[in-house]
Image (cartoon, rainbow, N blue to C red; front, side, top):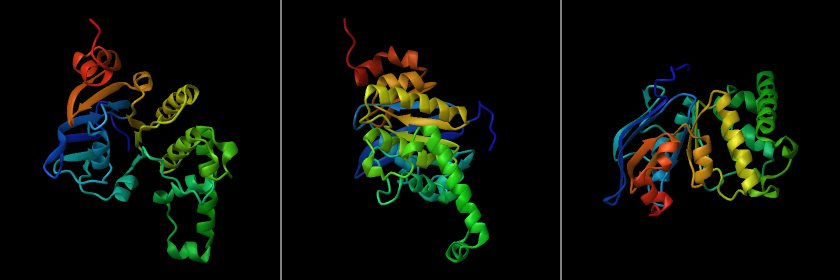
Length: 260
């Protein structure tokens, strides 16, 4: 779907989420423009993961609405939202450890599968052709993220940094319009984080929009066009990285108190 860069690809309208009377998210509204990279930061317990779960359909909001590509997606199942082009990764890596790296990425394309159950069961020509195409596209994605040489390894044999790249690769296999990255730099060293930043830019160059939750402030400020800051479930700032870094509310809430 082609959208004007001034039109919101994702729009969050007044989202609230309560857990037993405790507000994890309170009146949260923001938008993400097409082909942009938006950072989403805040202290532990600020509500970032809850917001991601609401956006991706894992949780239903107590109130408020989520729109993607101009369509209301509030209340849809996660697989339906993924089919529409909104996919996510997870803070706790979730891979198929009994499959190879390549097979993990191929699994990510299931939302784009056109062959039905009977075609798969009977190994009909169209199913075989689709499987060949899926494998080729999966290898292209592994090359993009730098894992082509590990295609036939099992995920358990990979270091944590490569496992995070694999999860990103599997999300890319779904051909998303928007990717929600949940702490992709967690557990990475400085070199791996630098490589991740370059990958995020390469993904955006392919026309994919990115919303990234991350604790690595240097990474967020490097890759983001705009940064949203959450504290106690409420938005306290939303601006370009340079202004976020000097915002007194953000400094106090997340970066530490300013020096005198």
